[in-house]
Image 1 (cartoon, rainbow, N blue to C red):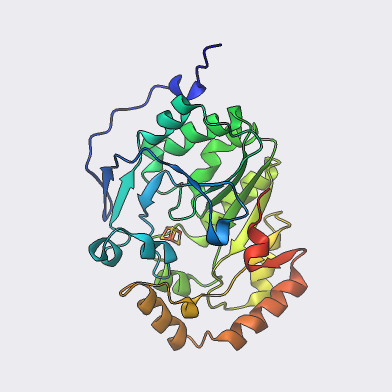
Image 2 (spheres, rainbow, N blue to C red; image 1 turned 30 degrees about the horizontal axis):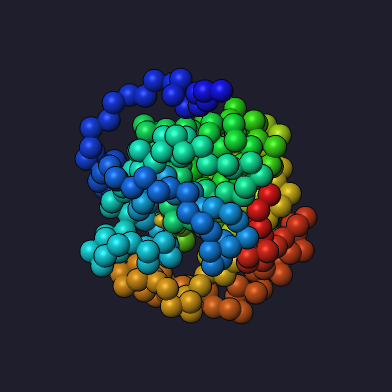
Length: 285
Ligand code: SF4
């Protein structure tokens, strides 16, 4: 039987590279390898899936910057993105058996960063993964994720993790000034939950909080029942100059040390229905 993946059914607008999205230059990547055998922190999964290299959000604490190909790209984290436009059709042609395979999307980029609105790489991939009955965990902080509710509903095993790191606009502006606001993230995860999808809020990393109790109340109001928290890994030694150092200095200035983190987690544990910590919260669905 000749398989015709539905990803070829939707016409896509022509995009000329490079293009600018805000401060980010987006180029086309020639990479055809897009499903990577998972390892390390993600080794409970069969594959990680990264449709983009780089990330427009450019968070100051992003460990993914460490994996940038050279020091120039590390230093300019947030200002470049490479779109793997050919990779999904390559997977489609290869007919990789994904039935029951666990996929984490994405480990070193945000799949729903701004360029996705024009390129639809994730949307194409979701159609493919759903057709092949993969088990998927989506990790994002972007409201664009609600665009794909129709496709999420086609999965038997799926979880959408929405990252929310603080209750303070000032802290968010200091650590992740180019990301969507918390209000938009919480509104998005509320919509996903109301659509009957399996959702989780990941406070990874947890940044300084103004009021852990009211923060927990705000999180609970989304209808989400599962939460994950993880400390800011300043000691991991995997940050790059200019990004991680800046974030570490900010945490010092804000007095966000292990004691402050543990006190906040104790409140969250008391106030939230289910709170995992670290890797336990990232297991496949
Ligand atoms: S959104 Fe995620 S991948 Fe992108 S810069 Fe922030 S932490 Fe890194």
